[in-house]
Image (tube, rainbow, N blue to C red; front, top):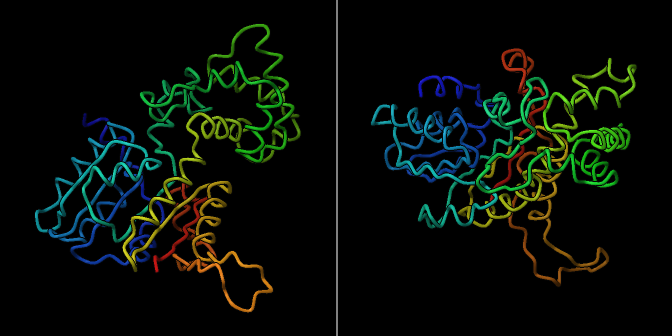
Length: 321
């Protein structure tokens, strides 16, 4: 167990900025929708006090156990009521009903996949380690694996998945190479897939910009776990559960997630659906959110140096009206 706990010590991203933007007060109810190693939650707990409530959500049993251990080892004077729930933030409605809270005061989504999950070879997330092509965040709930996507989707669907989920400009060529390769034998390991992707991307393009398989692996992970639909559902539920004046803070790591966060914030901030030439609003749809960050908050150079995973992070904040 201690080895696992050590693995869950990944550094929380934009920690000081998150704490500032959550506007925490004692006795509040805070939700960490992506608990992970509890890096953010440990600092939040200290500010909620013994009358506050901290609800932590994660779909990984090991992460929950490690987080509980850390949070319960805080001095009693810094320990809020803890409710740690196993699940996915896409089911936030059900989870908050289970937690039996009337509403929440602040919620944090840190959308970075736990580095522990990515680094566990048997989960097949990593293009650096050889393992079976699984990529399910919660194998109990999801049935579709990355191997099934790779071996059963036709070339057009593979192209769509890779292009839409990662902006990979060689998507159609990669899809073509996958379809050709699987005619000889099924593609079952991350190593096989990496070799196919390398063959598909011209050498001159491979030399620039990170590992050639990175984008395709991201695209498959998003497809297998329906990540973008789940994010949309989770954000919509968060807005409903927030008490007036409550804060919604989201850290995203790629442009697709950031776009969903931005669009959701705008949809709730500009509810009026009347034509622009109406002199007064007739639809009566009042704004629900105020956007606090017109532009996302980005990590400092020092933070990126300390923690390379922060490089692509963007923090957006909205307040419930």
